Image 1: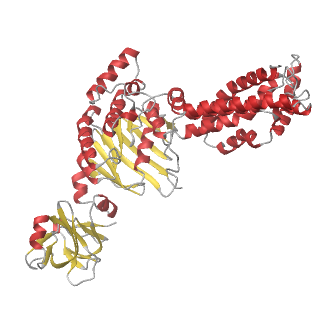
Image 2: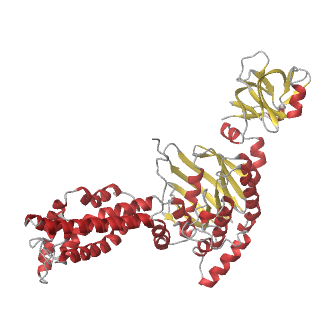
Image 3: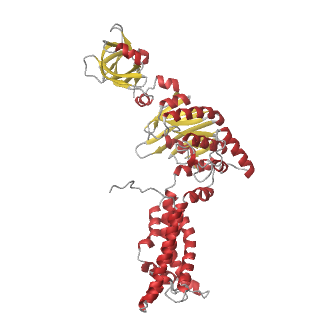
Amino acid sequence: MELSVCIEKKLRDFTLQIDFTLRDEVFALLGASGCGKSMTLKCIAGIERPDRGRILLDGEILFDSKKDIDLPPQRRQVGYLFQNYALFPNMTLAENLCFVMEGSKAEKKQRAHGLLRRFYLEGLENAYPGALSGGQQQRAALARILASKARLLLLDEPFSALDSYLKWQMEMELMEILPSYGGAALLVSHDRGEVYRLASRVAVINRGAMEPPADKKELFRHPGTLAATLLTGCKNISAARRQDGEHIYAVDWNLTLKTAEPPPEGTKYAGIRAHFLQARESAAGENVFPMEAVQIIEDIFSYIVMVRPLGSEAAPLRWELAKEEWQRLEGRELYLYFPPEQIMVMES
Amino acid sequence: MELSPLIITLKTAAAATFITFFLGLALAYGVIRMDRGRGFMDAVITLPLVLPPTVVGFFLLLLFGKRSTIGKFLLQFDLSLVFSWQAAVIAAVVVSLPLMYRTARGAFEGLDANIIYAARTLGVSEWRIFWHLLIPNARHGILAGLVLSFTRAMGEFGATIMFAGNIPGRTQTMSTAIYAAVQANDYDLAMQWAVSLVLFSLVFILAMNAWGTKKPSPLGKVPR
């Protein structure tokens, strides 16, 4: 399975520019809401029409603005899992599946029952979608996509409308089900955790502009741009500039930090994740600074301590640490170590 | 008692509603699928709803009259629409069509677009989407449109009297019979038809409301 997408579409506030190729993998588009992620899926499925570009699925042209080809969604065989699952409310579950299948009545019925059994929906054949839980609806929608013989699965924020308990349960179910689709899927989400757990490669979209896809581990380690750093959940970001071959100056925090790799000339921002800051006993050594706590917030399993360089008016940094550790440190003089290999440097 | 106005009214309204139902659905579906010119088409179809029915009747008279192209064409087959029962049906269709069209369109537009999108991505043809998804899921709105256009057709007066006349036993409906009765100073007869019309319309609208699902007030619990 290979999907190649290279499209452009003018939206109200910005132009959507997407370019990637997906091969037998779970590929994710990570972006804030309203960045054009869902529009991308709609263009691939044929629900919306891009202004320019090409979409190929296994070598077949789904859309090509130059050749004036725009296959209707019915002929694309692209399965789309909608956020609200979009089951047909006037049909029972079995009818929902039969409605999208081909063949004789008896064949369809038999296949529908087989699929529903496989998705743990046995006994609900005659239930209407309105009577099902969110999890059951999602499984039914996935079974229906499988019934239609889709070649590719598009997942549009599949868990965004759920509470955290159900969300986790359904995420695990989805991971179990994904191999049924040949393991290839395109996921769009704003949730970094979801993306990291489900996908192998990730591309960040920021106001319609897509950054080059990267391996997820690589992306989370070196997001490279401000948008990607924010989307991967980094809480501490400061304007920064290169000081010399191994140091940057973080303007907002008024700190000079040593970096693991030589900072580029065009350094504009620097960031460090909240749980990578480490407490030290004294100010000895590089990248260790005396700090003061500005605000202490107790979370469920950790403390979030807002800190800034001692005696300064600098912007505070967020530091997350285990409860026992903070209970040990509270009231003592604080020295924080910024591990050079954890300092992310951004040029844009 | 002469029952012909009742029979003519019901016959006219039934025939008109039959046409209006399918035409209104087709127009509603056609207009929501339009890329451009949607506002213009909508205005043209809605116009008979706001125009005085006499204006509608007057234009129908010009359009189908003996001096018009259509009128001349029909005369070749010895047919004349003006002052015929068929004219009463046409007048009722034109006047009731906007009600069917608008309610059906509203019902279609109220559907979750994702359901239609999902059906398309799952390979379901536009034709099957229309009959198996759009119509069944918009059934409450469509039924409301049906009842509104039927009751409107039953009560039609202005366009009917202009275009179909008020010929007892042929084109005289309950509403034109009331007019004739009042002119003849026969208030008892007028009252008889007026009460009949009110009762018929009331029964149909009550039936429509009974069919629809009961929704809580959109205002919630109103503070007193």
